[in-house]
Image (cartoon, rainbow, N blue to C red; front, side):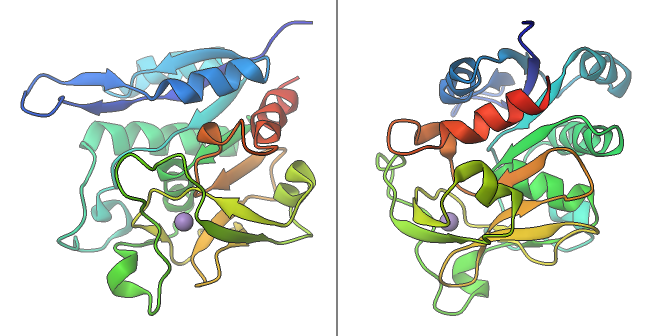
Length: 238
Ligand code: MN
C-alpha cells in the first residue's frame, strides 16, 4: 500500500532578536503524521502561489497547523491590540491551501490557527481576544512550560464526524489560544465547544474530510486516542 503524502503548513517568522525569516514547525506535527502512517512533507508559505499550487498538486492531504493570529483584515475587521498577526505571506498561502483543498475535496485536518484559517477561508470571522470578548471565559492559554497539560473540558456534538473519529464526546484538552471562531463560515458546522461556549471544533460536511479542532492533538498522543485524528486524515487520502 502506498502511504499518502501529507502536506504540513509551516510557520514563517524570524527567531526572537533577529530579522532573518525562518521556516519553523513543532516536530510533534511531523511525528503525528508519521505515527498515522502518512508521509510528512513540510510546505513553506513564503513562495508564490504558482509554486505553492505545484506542491499542492503533489500532496494527497493537508494539515494546517498552529501559529500566529490571522491578520483581521482577512475577515474585514480592525485589529484588537492583543492580536499578534502572522506575516501576510502565511495568511495568503494558508487561505489558498484551505480553499483549494475545500474546492477539490482533498482531505484536510486543521489545528488551532488551522481551524481559524478554515473558518476565514469560508467567509467566517474570529473572536480576536477571548479574555475581553467572552464573559466568564475559561482559561484557554496555559502558562509557558505547561503547554502539554490538558486543563479544560470539551463537549463534542455526538452527531458530528469528529465524534465518529474520536469515539468519545467529552474529555479534557490542552489549550494555547486567545482567539476562536466567532461566526462560522458558509457551510461549516460547529462540532465542539468548551463550557464557556468557545468553539473548539468545526467541520465542513459537504466534503469527504474537512475536520478542525482548536486544541493540540499532536501534543496529546500519549494521553488519549488523539492519534485517531491523524489516522482519520491519512485514511481519508487512500
Ligand atoms: Mn481552548
